[in-house]
Length: 197
Image (cartoon, rainbow, N blue to C red; front, top):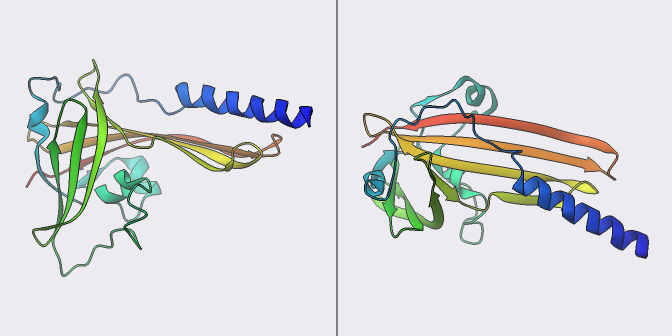
């Protein structure tokens, strides 16, 4: 019994260290197109196309049907949704961002000019001029490193010179079976641009 408690404690410490480490980190050489601060943070308020207008080469390889809803959802709306947002070619879709306070942001998903889903989450404005979403960045699947994995997903947003929304995502996925066989260990970064409407 004591061995099991020690093992579980080691696993919890490992998960804690991984969640605080730079497993999912952003490249340091990225140029921020619009330096966001407390004076201009409300410039993010606006409506954007839900489907990215351009993606980098990594995301083109890994994502087939990407939309902003899938990037931000992280199972937060699971209790209210039966499915992910499925885009119909007969309807128009967009999303609206509204800064509510110094720490919270509201994202509304629009279908045919009507709000169909809303998500309120916290954010942090950092010294690099990006807005970092605090949106359940750490997700445990099973018992990590025993029989499961650890998923970390961080998202930061800014605007480009044409006021299109730029999202940068850093992901880390790792897991193992019985602390021995590593099932997965990936770090990935990708960027999307969502057209201002």
